[in-house]
Length: 493
Ligand code: CS2
Image (cartoon, rainbow, N blue to C red):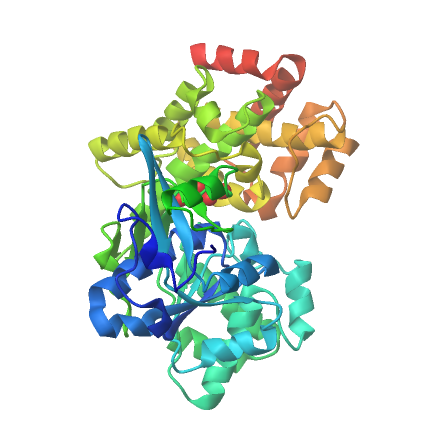
């Protein structure tokens, strides 16, 4: 029997279940980007909040829009929007039935109405997880004037990008004279609230509506947030595990996640769910330090594990972090390079770094390096170059960042030669492959051309030529030698 509202209570007592009736939820949140991360993160905290608020909580149902996966919206609808979250603890798996989504939609089916849903006075909050690439940003955090999707949205009646949808929705709110919802970016983007605010304002101006842009700036709250939970793509065992733990109920869309959960939200005005009912959620006045620590130490280290690990034939983050050479290299990178400008006590940083290595090595989480390696050109600036620049300005060495950049370039060089088994997804992939084709075997030219891309790396690095030479040398090593050998040598250095 398929999991649904009529039967979820029959799941065994060992399964966590919502303590409210999901049929009574009313929509209070519209979410853009109903992916795995959203289903394991904001839905979890919102469910805790609803459960803690009694009848009041029922106004916080989530209308969750998938941007790219119409089949997921259909599958959710078939299960009355319920699904299983499998928390992969080191010593076993815990199942929870998630029920805070009150309606699942496919954004493109509803584009004409999605902006209207956001502008509906019942919608008090809009959350977003469209990934860093869903904002079309360049290295300085502004929207890319050459991004084709954004350009298409400029003239579209029903925009498809997040900045486009939000600008249209805000124009509707303004026309009605209503109170705009609070817009909460939950993606791994530096200063994510402020950045999204500027993106939506710029988009409105591009459409020729400077007044709307100014109105958004004055009237709409875009708090910053830091989100953290490692959520792999659904695992092959998920469905069997869900059926077993749910006592035979079938779930076609379960998800797995690690136990760790963090959501740090900048305080804002207006009604909201009691998210802090979830022990990992909290409201603060300034998110910057949390965000910097997380983006640099977790997400930056993820990139090194993915790019160098991928070259060494390691398929998952757990394998890469457990590798006797790469593991220590990443630990050093995280602790010595990626803490630049993270204003936290040394012991806190030590503990965070140690926790991260344990999380990376969680054997229950099969996180493919291919996935983490996606969209590097969008992630590079804030996760890697920001701390690298700070280190270089202080005369500190940056061997981890050099290895990371060289490994990333090597992915494109190998892909261009059809010699990379990992598939490669990046909005700038064609251009990056072309650089490698034009400068075949010339590592200096490849390094120079990559690092010259200001939209990816920002302005020239301190002592730029020296950094180019260092990247070219690492590229040479990675070409001449087997990657595991390069890593062994670096680990021993
Ligand atoms: C990862 C993140 O894909 C990536 O870029 O680094 O999705 C990471 O797993 C999460 O940010 C963890 O909170």
